[in-house]
Length: 424
Image (cartoon, rainbow, N blue to C red; front, side, top):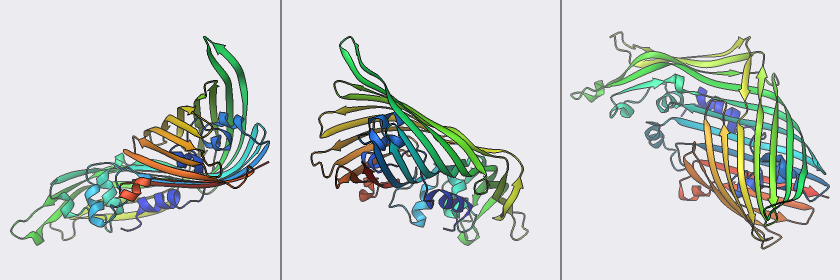
């Protein structure tokens, strides 16, 4: 399939970047299946700043790399032309991705981080996706035989992405301790907050118009069968130049630990947006045309344009994440996590994620992690695994990977993360 406007924008912007994500792509979190709000120490930077109050070192330096890509339609075995065409019939296609690379420096209750960040999502009508991703803009006759007539609504396509540099400052501390109420003892309550200054690029995807496609079948002479088109449509992206967009974002979190080794936590991440005073418009227009002047429009004419300057304000809301979770430490060697999170995207999509995870530290040198999650947008269960390599108390490496369902050809996404930690 050609690198059409859809894939040129989404893959180049989202999948090929080497920046950091707005939601956690920490290696420890990936290995346990999600960015649990009850995580503590340096791993809590991406999921709940309150957890950073429970660090063990005065000084620490952590570098983290990770990426995540997923969709809601295709599994990892379905990449032949026939399978793709078959899947793009009846369900809106969602493509989403994040990539992560960053460094954080920790000193007592503070953390200073210099990162990049990139995230994005695109949702489009399944039939519009077939037009946007085909070698030619036409819908195949075979795809129409069972339907007869379809209406391709380009206004149902939309989404957004951003790629920015991120400088942040975090602060976390204990605010209560040893509070007793009806024999239920609360050991400590922690609060944390992070401020982000962002500068980079915005991309907003949208479509308008409608195209009708109808199969005209000549049973006596199948070679005379064709697809008849009507209407016109447009798919476009509004984008800023590098560094023209800027904004601020905040993370907040609370964490409460009880004396019976339970932890309860809540966090709100990415409260903010990016904006710029002008942007450029790139796009493609599709119009039904007649190839032989017989009055029947039998092909779509595609016209592309690029770089039309728009002196108007453009904004992009960061994917806002709310997390609520619980953790139980059964022993020093076994910890279980459970979280619910809701992610609200700039395009109006809401994702509900349910996750459970675990960490086993029977061998201090190599802690093992396992977890799974379900996403309402991805419509799929994801299985994750990870491990740590504790070379010493002051130097550690963590690795996480998901979705292990790819081993049975039933994964809709891929996550991978690796981090290094030095503490003293």
